[in-house]
Image (tube, rainbow, N blue to C red; front, side):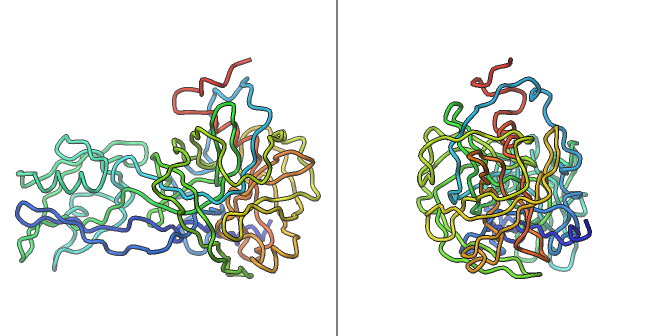
Length: 399
């Protein structure tokens, strides 16, 4: 459909992160200067396929949705029949496995030493001189302690590991410079979709989290927190809106993140999350049980209160295996339209209910028509929640 060429990825560029950092050393001391640091958290939300307005397309992501292959272990697996539905606003902190290169800078009048050494934007620095790098602070420490004139880097580039050598430049002030901008984590606010009490697994967002600068999917781990919405920027045609949120108690963790996939972020929670709209579990619909017509989404527009809003399911897609863009969601609720203009940043992951079942989650918005967007089937999210790298959750039994 022609209108699908006007989707917008409403996450990259709207993620509050730990910022980009210049890495340099003076004598025995290495420091990092924050290039920018956002004070308020914004939202992860609504990565869309097609032609983007202010970010690269998913074809530039390491694991594009179109090339995603579901795990073989999904076949013949019996899943939970009912889950607690979400709708709560959650704070997300996602740490990359290694340090992500997001840019370069000149060192005085010279090109970046790191760029000259053939490091590329999107590379994940794994080791320096054989020492594992997990964070920016470890990168700082290893560069500070290195006595060699040339540093040996091992970086993860796409599916390959690449060895490169970088010779830092010492500037006129005696600073040891790499000319490298890096990031090791990102933060934001999204929406919880469901919680499976039998396995203590949850699903959220409904789409992959990508880095704001590189457009690459972030391979890593993280934590989810309680959060609240303190403002709404109303959307309109050509100008998507957004929720504005913040972590409520960043020192208290709700759960962990162990998977960042095309179908959302997934992890473990020990307890049923707070602020439930419904205190009872409901069934998860099979794709063939979903139909065009009236439905309800659950989301937060004020504080921490989960509220129901009416929508219509349009153009429900027949899918026999996990695929994104399962249906078109059309917001019809008068109050939601008045307050938000339709689907806005921050609604990504909002559960969709129909006929007493959880049928899916909101994942995309159409820039030309913010009253409409995509949803993904909840069945695919639930299956992904129970899949772990190299193994299945011990609670999932084969038939």
